[in-house]
Every structure is written in C-alpha cells, then in structure tokens.
Length: 452
Image (cartoon, rainbow, N blue to C red; front, side, top):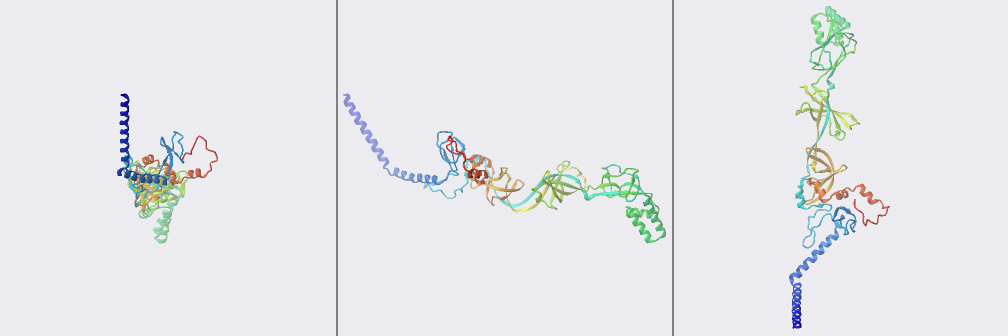
C-alpha cells in the first residue's frame, strides 16, 4: 500500500516539472521577450562604448571621496577596488548616442535640484561705461597761494602792535601795527618840500620813494591831502584771514626785511590726499573730487584736482594729490582729517560683472561660468577697477556670458572644483611634480600615488 502511494507521488511530481519546463520555454520564445532582449543589447553596448571613450579624471574610494588617485587599483582604506570619476556623465538616448548640445569638455555637472537648493543666481557679462573711483584720506591745509607776509623796508621801532597772538583772526583793512622810522619820516618831509616847490618831477620822485618803503597809494594820498608828515607808518591787513606767524613784539627794533606778520586767507584751502600708487594713474589735474570731514557729518565739499606731486612716499607707497576746495563759510579748517572721493575719466565699452561673482584666491581671480543651468566651469580672469558693486573684467570673459553671482562657493564644495582649478591654471607646482623623476622608490604599502 505504501509502495503504491510513493509511485503515484513520484509520477505527479514528474508531471508538474514537465509542465513548468514547457511554460518556461514558451515564455523565452515569445516575440515580446525577443524584442526586449534585442532592444537592451545595443543600449548596453552603447553605454559601455561611451564609458570606454571617456577618460576618468581620477579614481576614488566611495567611502573616502575626498581622497583622489591617479590610477586604478585597490583602495588603501577598504578591501575594495577604486571607482573612476568622470568630469561629466554623458547622457545617452535610447540608441546610446549622446544628444546635441552637450556641455563642452571641462565643465562640471551639478544636479539641477542641488543648484536650486543652493540658491544659485546667475548674471550676465555686460558692457558699458565705467568710471574709476578712488576713495582715500587726507588732511586739510592752508592754500599756500593765499599766504602773504608783511615786512618792514626801513629801519625803525614798533610803537604800536594791535594783533599780538598767532591764530588771531584779522579783517580786511584792520590796523595791525605802527612802526616809527626816521628814514620814512625824512622821505615824507621831502614830499612836502616838493609839493611846496610845485615841481612835478620832485613830487613824483618823492612818491615813488615812499612806495618803495612799502606805503600804499592810499597812505601817500592821505599824507598829501593832510599836508602833514606822519611820525608812524601804519600797516593794515590786506584780506580776511588769520595770523600764521608773528615776528615782532611791542617796542622791538626792526630792520629792513623783518617780517611783522604772516597772514593766511581761508576762503580757499588745500586737501592733501594720499592715493595708492596702483590708482594714481587714474587721476589727472582737473578731475572732480568730493571731500567729507568728520566735523561736518553729511556735508560734502566740491573740489578739483590741482596737482599730482612728482615723488612717491616710500613708506606708504602712495602719491600725494593736491585738491583745491572753495571755503567761503570757513567750515574747513587746517589740520582737519578728510575723506576724499575722486572720479576718474569714464572708460567706454568696458566688460563688467557683479563683484560678488569674483572669487579671489590671493594669487588669481576666478569666475564660475554657467554653460547652462546645470553645467559650470571655472575661468581665470583679470580684474580691473570696482565701482558700485560691479568689477571691470580686462581679460577672460566675453559679452553675454552667464556667470554665477551667488552660491559659487557652494558649487565649488558640491562639485569638488579644486582639481579643475589646478588643471585650468596649469600651476607651476603641478608641472614641477610631473616633470621631476621619482628618485625615491615608492613604499610597498602604497599600491598607487595620490593626486594632490
């Protein structure tokens, strides 16, 4: 009984196996299965061929992606093979052929979702006029063209001194001092005698002699009108200003050439500004300038570049620039600290980009150019002046290119552009390392060299 049961069970099992085999063979022979197989074969071959044609930038361990190697092999960190890293995954269509419009070689692809998450903002390279601005500091000083000295031209004594301190303000026509001079007194008496004789030649000679002693035409006319000689010759202020220097005191004896006063007129002042030597060539006499002083917040004074000094200050590597500023209100006083803003000549047809798009590494300037919304590449540029948040591009870009204005540092971190920068710049360090022969044998524990 048991033997018959076993025979029946074996027969049923054989029948089931036969049926399953027929079903499997029938599925492999269907047109749908053959179409799928024939369709996948060329795609796999195309992907493999595309991968073979592309040259890896480096090899890396997926567990340590920051470490790069210049050849394949086994990872020194894990017991696994190194994976190749390509510059840009080549997209393929159904037939395995790269479509048109693929980003040029050297660009690095960043997933569009990552670009959106990073808040990347693009800007265009624009062309237009560009004014070079120079912002610097300086000091307010006296306009040396408006300094006047009052001197004695005949020996005598100071009998009257109305202004007795340096820094005192004076007004035009104000009496400053009176000097007794025997020579002047004798010359006045000669004028009186000449007038009595009514000899025009003698009268004119006496007048000229008094003028040579420093008397003004008004003083000579007053002496002639009064008909009396004056014991003391008075000296008056020729303009509104202040006393820069006082050379005598009450009762002093004076000789020809003695300076009684030095007066300065403050209706015009000089601003001596220090301009860096790299920006000095941007300025020329006649350029406008704006001056600000801490003593008058919010107030600006218009000036004009008057002179560029011929010598450079060695300690600060700056050039002194003299600015003339009108000062009728006397708000600018000598010794004040001033901020100077110069406007150089406008440059026409200049390429500019937002200043925030420039990555300055200390030795070079780099801008991230966007070939499209997901492909980026670094470009070395030469940057000129900066104004109003935009930088002048002297070399490296063309009009209309798109550049990354914000988020470029995050793109650098996401796409690991450090190696791309080194390859683009062709740094001397990399060339030297490649050109020098390996004099020391590599340790046996390192199956491959790392790419620095």
